[in-house]
Length: 107
Image (cartoon, rainbow, N blue to C red; front, side, top):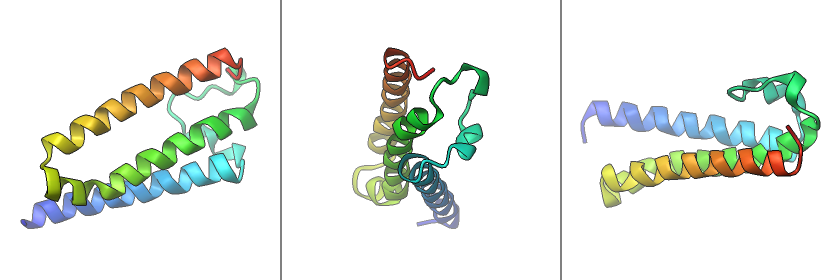
């Protein structure tokens, strides 16, 4: 394994840990003051900040766990079979969170 791959895997691991921490603080601890870290967050459009944190927290934890396990998955299955499911997970998860928030009138 090359040095470049080790650096990339280290960055992915750190990004995964950051997502797990953010998801934990949003979803479990209800730290609504961290919502500004979400892309596209507009405080004036959110009706229930706690509900938004409760919905997005678990999604961020799942993404973080997948990113942390990426080095092992790439080693086992190869990069194409690892990153395509990640992209699908991000897209479908974002659509689900968005539709759920609109259905429950959180945003």
